[in-house]
Length: 234
Image 1 (cartoon, rainbow, N blue to C red):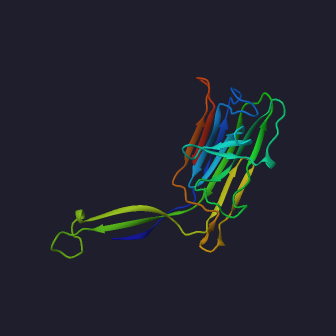
Image 2: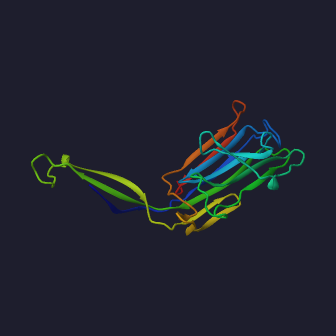
Image 3: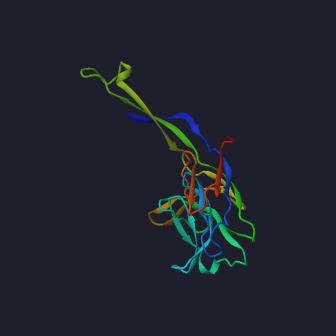
């Protein structure tokens, strides 16, 4: 049994679309959660999210939700970066995070963006695009010759094959955008301390795209969250 690489590769496929939250004034205010916690799209380990900002009175910090796990991850905004809101404003935050939660050198992942919706505005929409990674198809052939014969199979039933996509060697280029965030570059080899090293930013090739919704409450018949997605333009 041996795995051999084939001539078949799956290059960086572009994923594009929009994250949209609507009717976000059905509940909540600048300090309290609205009807939707957050929405997100995930490709490989890269998470693109848009979340309501609310005040966590237990932690005494503003917080937001990133829905790539169960239960969803709650993040906190450092006090020095805490937003302030005018009368009637509500806050949202969008950004890019690593679903594998690798640390990496500071500055590897881009800063988040806080958006304040003015009084009377209840919707936010941000466009996104992702393209990174490459996979090669590996084929494993297994032979099971009948008893008493040599190792060379004769009949079709004596040999089987299985295919598996595996990441092509790094470094990879990456091109990701979300709203006003533009995150592009090429992975670099990084050694932090002995026995901690790797290609940063850490990236795993997408096998598809996931759409995640995290709803808190709402009124029947109203639409609160929408995700659109195109894979290679389709």
